[in-house]
Image (cartoon, rainbow, N blue to C red; front, top):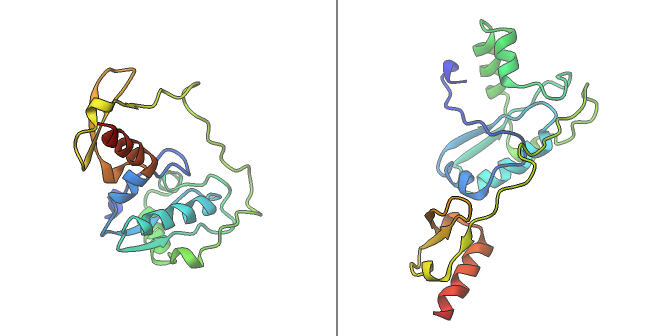
Length: 171
């Protein structure tokens, strides 16, 4: 997409847009462009981006005859010379999230199935009471690496901030 003049961000698989990542788009004009068949996920992530403060947001919609899993890279490989024109047309035809169809029924092929790439998820960082001394920051201790990481409280899930605040009150 960069070759066609667009700044682009990619994420591995649908439904992975977290709150901290969504906040990075605050104040920006955003086009959500998921693989064909992931219309529902594109719609949900578009709403997350709006909630996080994106200035404007539109969703690209694949042609109805595009099979499940069709993606931007595939289009670039299929037709490198026509890619820029195709992409410009797709972006020009974007719609606000409220008017995007979220039903992928009728598409050829099987929907993508996302599987964790590791057999067991890594352990979550743990809050350590001694580290909860900053009002706007939370220090996390990662059990595997043993490293301390300071994270802005506003970038954390609300439940983590609540736990940190409970720890502060005990001190």
